[in-house]
Image (cartoon, rainbow, N blue to C red; front, side, top):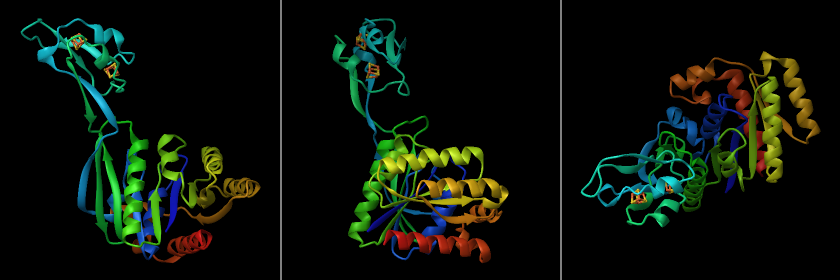
Length: 296
Ligand code: SF4
Ligand code: SF4
């Protein structure tokens, strides 16, 4: 089984539309939506959920109001300013402390120092993850809770589950819609993948983004190909991207012209291959052929 991850320097480059198009072209595949901060592969693939589980990115502290003696030691110890003197009173004191779950980093310091054993420390539920059926094969995806920041761990979990399914069902290919950027979630998306396709646009920021992402994949020793989306909106920039990519030993395998089908297909909950024939579909098919050839 081979792993293809589609990534970009920022969101909104058409990465997910291209991933969905590949899903409809692949024959025996598992899909993983690792863009957990802006998961939208499900909008096109309309997954039917077969299994769902809570995701816990770590433990979190919470004060047991009835036990708190209002000494304030926890608030003094918390480096993240997560503990406030705004809790209800109890049989012991008129006012107690509370912990803001968004600010709590789960360091456990307050738990260790509370003289009344009044702080619980339990797994926090940061989101949900799902195994679903789509018309192109199984898909693993997730929904992160609001303001949650454990997306690197969640990405790792999604990939692990998708690989498990691929092994169990003898799938040939795992297609990952990777997280954008160069942070922890994208590192979790690409580590150990066989091939990364970087989707970029012919703009100055597109060129810089490509540079940063390509540096990242190079650091992790991942074979990398490039796709320029909306290539015709600035042919000179597209040429520069091709030149820069060549200098770095990266091949541009697709130059996709600007096309309203990207938006229209999404509205119709269809992949580009399903929604439109002609030029765009041919370019995507040719790019996918080259990718599968490179994957070997
Ligand atoms: S250290 Fe314990 S007892 Fe003291 S204020 Fe904090 S939770 Fe309450
Ligand atoms: S676990 Fe750490 S971050 Fe969370 S409230 Fe306690 S001291 Fe603060």
